[in-house]
Image 1 (cartoon, rainbow, N blue to C red):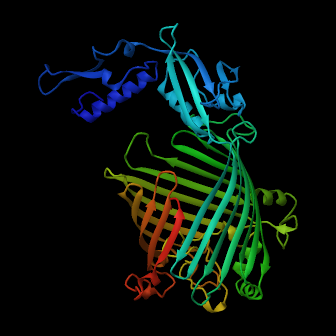
Image 2 (tube, rainbow, N blue to C red; image 1 turned 90 degrees about the vertical axis):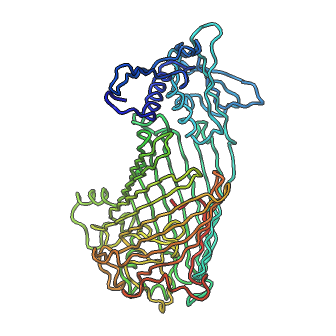
Image 3 (cartoon, one colour; image 1 turned 135 degrees about the horizontal axis):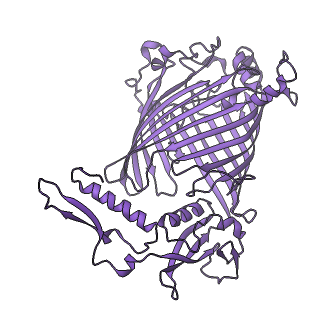
Length: 576
């Protein structure tokens, strides 16, 4: 609020809220917004008035009193049926044990209240948000009680109710497509929410999926994938102690170890091993970081049929992408949001991801001489060298009073091989299509560019590329209660950085980008009880880049049986 402004009630309300927040963060615990009133003096004339914000005369005496904190007690694993069995002083706080679940230091690290401080609503909110982000508590709250012996003193109780330490979970995902593909997926796991008495979360899971082509030229082609993963999440940065992080979320150290097996029955099989170690932290309420150092994966083609070998022999770029699968590097993702607390206005969420492989190792090898003709090797395997960028932009905007929302997403990516590699490893290439991408096309069935796979080869190969662009627009609306609907449109494609004679039309060219876009649209139903979202999307292709240039629009090409030209997706969670 500034001098010479036009009168605006909304501006006055915002100013009162700002002043109230400042006062409640400086000790005025009982002060409420209706205790502050504006007094206007219009005697100046000339349509001018003086405005003064003051405490109303009928405000309670306690609203005028400033409070400091006395004792701060932390109930680290509170149980409503059990009495406390122990207490210990940590710094200036009193930690109270009920179940002996956690080491006191691991919990009080997230408490930002100290005796002698003025009461602060901001520090209170930070404490509850920080401890909630551990992911091990069912509820977190701070209760204040006036000290009966010391006027103007509040005693604080930080009450933490833990979740069950051990739990089993499962996730089911399925896609059933009228363009001849169908298959379910299942993930089953075990979670320990206090692995080493420091609120660490240890997760072990097994996942699998199966897909089959139920009709068409390659009817009966099956594929399956199984994998196991072990993950540990530690609610602090290990081993470093100095890091600029927000007090609204705990920084975490994450370590993962996984093994997977993918088999396209009768064609080929891939096995993979991966491990990573990294950190995730919020710099402030708007910015967060994700670093993986190192990020290692090893993939090998353990089985190939005669037909697949013959296919690789005539498609050297694809063959090299399967061979160069030793990835040793690092990754980093920067994310920023414009979302404001207690604001219903639209907001942007932008992120840019970067990952690389082999650059530090290749630089070390160069100290010993030039690169040999067969490339640099590690453990008798040629390692991959590349850089990859993955920018993404999302926009969320609320519409109306029933929770309707307009959501847009732009997704891009580029991966460039060099040095020790001629192609990007298969597992790091981009693809489009599927339940979280262009929903009118099955996963990995679009591109690169206008390339048309040879259906007569008898080999069903995933369509991947080095460059990706995708755009999505979705309008979400409430039908009744937890049942919600959606209208959406998706567009995108992938391309190759370098020309591949075996995949004509796949190389990226600016003048062809728009004409080579795949386009689809559809409708969806979502069951959203705010705990888990079950999503059903029905989409149809509108434009297919694999067709000849004059025949790519197919929206008027619906067959007599309309469901022969649509894709039905079942998934868990929103696509973006």
